[in-house]
Structures are given as C-alpha cells and as structure tokens.
Amino acid sequence: MELYQLRTFVAVAEEGHLTRAAERLFISQPAVSAHIKALEEELGLALFTRSSRGMRLTREGAALRPQAEAALKSVDELRAQARALREDVDGELHLALNTDPELLRVQRLMNLLRTAHPKLQVHLPQSSSNIIVEDVRAGRVDGGFAFVSLPESESCLPHELACLHLSDTSMHVVAPAAMSGRLDECSWADLAREPWVWFTDTCPCRSMLEHQLSPYTTEIKKVAVTDYEGTLKTLVSSGAGLGLMHRDEAEELEREGAVCIWRRDQLPIGICFLYRADRASDPGIRAVRQALREVWELPDC
Image 1 (cartoon, rainbow, N blue to C red):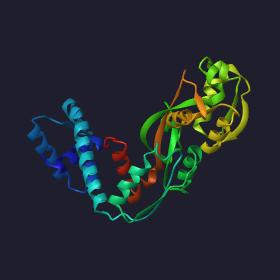
Image 2 (image 1 turned 90 degrees about the vertical axis):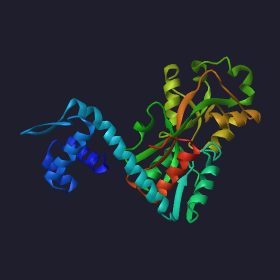
Image 3 (image 1 turned 90 degrees about the horizontal axis):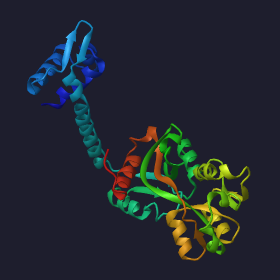
C-alpha cells in the first residue's frame, strides 16, 4: 500500500468524482482509476460504487476512510516536525505571562527553548488574562498564557485565536486572615454580603463570580476593581475584602498567614497558551508549542 493510493482514495471520497479528484491531485483520470483499483485489489474490498453521477463510497469504504485520513495526517505531521527540526529558529518572541511563572512552568519552557533554539530571544512581559487575549488578537504580543473559563473554554475566545489547553486548575475565594474563624461556616449567600476586590469586565473571573453571587444579591460591594494580581493580593491581605485566586497562589499566601481560603467550593478554570490561528505555521510559534507539549506532557496531535 502506497501513500499516493491513500491520498487518491481520500480525494475521490471528498470530491465524489474521478475528474475533480484528478484535477485536485494534478494527475490524469486514468491514473486516479488505477490507484483506486490497485488499493481495492490489495484490500480485497470495493471502496466505491460507480455511476454516471460519480463515485460513492461503499459501506466498507466509508468505514476505512477515517483511518486513511488519520494515516495521511500523521505523515503530514511527521514531515512538518522534521521541517521544524531543520529550521534554525531565530528572531524575537514576546510571550505574555498572566500569573506566577512557577505555575506556568516557565523555567522549564525557557530551558527547552534555549537548548533547541539558542538564537531565539524570548521576552516575557507580565500582564493579565483579559489584556493578553486582546494583545494576542491584535498582534501586540506573539502569544500568551491566560486563564480561560470552563466549561466554555475556547468557545469564549475571539475566533482569530488558537488555544493550546495546558492544564486545569481551580480558583478559590480568599479572605483576610482575620476571617479564618468564621469563613468556613459561610455559604455563597453569606459571601455575597461581604465586600469584594472585584475584576474588570473582560476578566473571566468576573463572570465566574457573578454567576455564583448574583442569585443572592442585586449589588455586589466592590471596594476596588483591578485586573492585576499584585493589587488583589495586597488588598485582600490588608483586610479590604474578599478576592479570587488560583489554587497555588492562594495556598502559598495562606501558608504565609496573609489570607485564609474558603474551602466549601471552588471554580474550575483552564490554563491555556494563546496565539493567532493564522500564525500556527510560524517557526517560532511552532517551537513554543512543541516545547509546551513537552513541558506539560501533552499528547501530540
């Protein structure tokens, strides 16, 4: 069985016509017929029924089509990876960080990139998820990390963006340490009556919190509105109000005695790497995605 036979099989299945498949593959119609005949003989199955209206997959052909498509995709990906390995990736990349670099495994990412692509310069500006989404979409940065709400995940992102889902974490309500004695007894209804360090309109945490609190109050008490984690930490630690932080950050601050965590509920959220979909073949973006897959132990796809 040859790859060109599989390509011809898939092309005829998609076009439903020998002539159109031949034009798409830039070969003659007799060559298309010969490829299909040879494949059918090797498999011992009729893949198409032929009529004056064109070519139609048989039941057996329809069953084999997904495997043929998957085999071709694997070969194409192998070739693309080989091309990427041959490329001497250089230049600059700006990858925005939305939270603690340790949570994002930035050190290992940078180690891999330096080893594989020593000429590539990577800049790591710090920002917030909602700003990073817009900066990536507008091309102000090449890519960036962001928290993305679950279960909606990628569906809530602008259509120009591609999303590499790295992992899931959870967001937790945190309160000033002085509340530790009574926080565990609180419900969402109780929390709705407390003052909050709130989020800007486009931050995914805002919609998550509103969904939980809105059944119990018509007006949330907002002592401040921010999209910067450092400000939120400072205000919650100083006793200004409640806030929402991802699990690792909240637990570290709790160990330091700066906040206490409400443990009766948590809000799931995705850790994602975003880039423009039309830059998917960019050597630098490919290099970063490949390194991220290794860092986060993601399957190749």
